[in-house]
Amino acid sequence: MAQILDGKELSKKVKDGVKVKVDKLKEKGINPKLAVIMVGNNSASSVYVKNKSKACENAGIDFEEFFLPEETTEDELVELIEKLNQDKLVHGILLQSPVPKHININRAFETISPSKDVDGFNAINVGNLTIGRDCFVSCTPWGVMRMLEEYNIDVTGKTAVVIGRSNIVGKPMLQCLLSKDATVTICHSKTKDLEEVVSRADIVIAAIGKPNFVTGKMIKDGAVVIDVGINRLENGKLCGDVNYEEAFPKASYITPVPGGVGPMTVAMLLENVVKAAEEKT
Image (tube, rainbow, N blue to C red; front, side, top):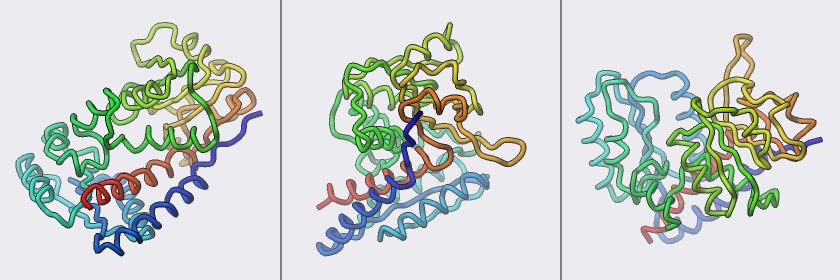
């Protein structure tokens, strides 16, 4: 029977550590500040921005929101980012996705200064992660690694399968695991015999955005199961990409949804903002 990886509890511990660092920076006259840009009226994004703002407030991090209308042009967005790049009081810049279809989000991410890219999406940070240099790591994969570390789950030599190849989770997750000497396979919609590939894994990380996609029979006995997915069912309930009830009896460790990886993502964002502020001292 699995031990639950409690992201809610661990995120509190991380946030407490962040607050201590923020207080030390303030003693030196540095007030860490995050600027968040949201384009359009996406209700889920509004909730995420509100959660980030509350987390910053609790940690003592200054927070400024830029809510831009749906019809904002790509050039206008880039202009705002460039202005924030130049603002010495802003340490981190976060562009909330998704953005309206007429905007090339990659151009926007590329415009964010690598030293303020607290989401880890700028190609320079992505490249540095790949070659093992210090950089800002995408918050969700970094949160997963922090969780594995906290529970003393050693990934060295283990077979890890990441389901999903997004730039936000799947690809940086591969690099994070590889840097800790795991043997990593990435599965996606074109993977053949996916069930068989997953069933060999010591560590399964599901980030595909499909409710209950990973069934119990896909989980090897004693595997570590990390569920990054968060999906809302027709009955209004939240569930992950893993069928929790089926996976729980077989796994050695498992993350719940909600209360697993989600809280860690916000906690690691705060860590990145503090890191950005510290590097300016």
